[in-house]
Length: 333
Image (cartoon, rainbow, N blue to C red; front, side, top):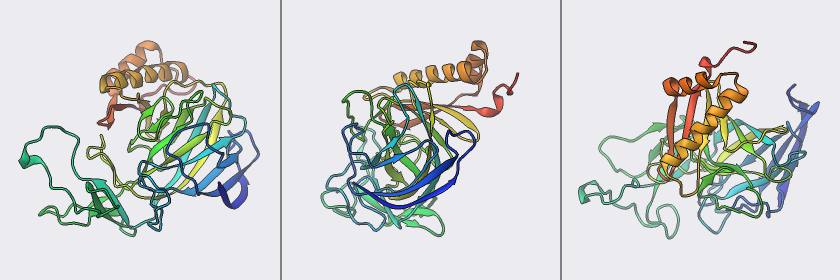
């Protein structure tokens, strides 16, 4: 169901197809755990419109710390239908604002490495410290004024306090046909990318498989390191504002992202290995550089060879390849 709070009209960006764009302020009251075309539409927007909303955390707790879902596992806001989007197009999702809105979060407590000796295995947190029935979740405090995060329990001699860096763990579209992956894995549709560069100021590009595109996002993190080593970031709710554009006739085979500094190709595959996903990301970047950025094939290979930055998104098997934009050919070369 859709609860529409506010719609305003503003001048659209010159590159978008409509003279005026709307801002849709929406609150989802029926979060989903799958990227599926079968879910009822949350909002219908035009290319260039903005969506303003609040996400819930991975257990379904909202900005007031009220649980809005019955089950754990990355509840998603959506689907958002973009008028005019057709299979073979690309959604262009600009993350205008990703902000903390709650003074609490939680993480897992141990890294995903098997067969650790007893001396390297941390004790479990207090039972039910975060949610009933979950004895492996560690509560964290979020200082909204100072924008820092820290565990609420004393677990070390040195205080573990870090600067927050809010990001979305999940962003993607409904895959083709009736395939409806849960919000745990990631793949060519996006999904649970858990990539720290999916943050304010980044633009995410996603392939379209159904009319309207059917965009979903959620799984807010106040902070997360590369690899999501403890199986989570600092899970929390977020205030989110996105602008959704549309690129007609561009067929992507993998999610992409762009920041002020980098082009980013993302390689994900359900149950894929890091070897497989690094090849997906590399193959996509080669195509991106040659087909859209004006490099020759020889230049593209050498740019990757000398300037690639490979990021481990999750220990579960996703990789990303970043190329600094300052090395790309000048426009009009």
